[in-house]
Length: 398
Image 1 (cartoon, rainbow, N blue to C red):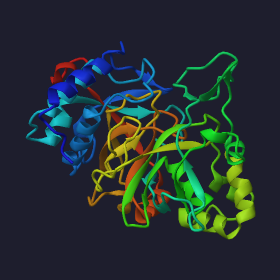
Image 2 (cartoon, rainbow, N blue to C red):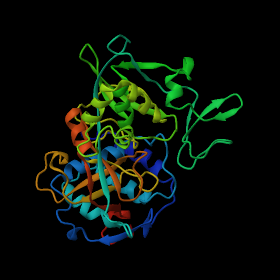
Image 3 (spheres, rainbow, N blue to C red):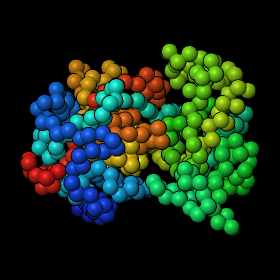
């Protein structure tokens, strides 16, 4: 979906106002304990790849998006002025997408001292589930809207008397309190504040939706609606699939989404206990599916581009930065490209498990096939960050 050009002036003004709020202006020598080693693009085999135009489209979407609901902390890597200038250039005609990335960015290999692998890449997807706007025997499990007493906390933000590790709070007449955990919410702790948006077939589908953070739900009349992340209770996340392995129910080898969700459905009592062990609980909102070819909005507020949108550690990297994944991706994650030596992707999302400078989660698409790809994508890979130059001129200070 091309970004509309007619409103590019408004987009640039909004983006500049957001980006210029951060005083960072120079390329750091290190990020998150990793060294940034300058490298010439010519030394990166295959750079910028056969799909530079698709990466440019993904970059434009992040440029055109409204500011994130939760602002990134000050000091994240990526000069905001240079990024705003580069976004403005991308909003105009770009005859050669490959030249755009070669000429307007400086490349830095992310080197983690003492690490046994260069970086680690996983995949995620948008599940497609069946559901109903009304409860019934086939659809008993509610998907809840964001409660009106939930206060989301940004990076480093806290409230008086609240454990600083919690990422949300509950507003009370006496101040702030921890938000109820999953088990308490399932047992009715929200009372009248528990407002269902729609109903799914079981708790396993709800878990998949909450783990992925968004999804499409097919209704009985054939319509599809998008269910989007709208906050969480701030409690720590525990991976249920990991618990299944740790308790010896299934081996790690060959553990796919289909296999572990099928096992949960076949063992409902154990499934209930394991799911409730995950204290984290996600709330949602409904939205139309405007473009079926694109994914839901990521944390950067831009629609995710299958194969080209990357979730990064948002406490370290600014949304919109391009990354070169240095190494071949599994064939199924290549979005149609063949013979890749690497992939150019754009930081457009984040996640609680995405921690560190050389850690990424690649959005691979929608539906069960994408789910199978995402479940199998767990690969060591090199990370190269592209930092924009002020003025766009080669040799300018990044």
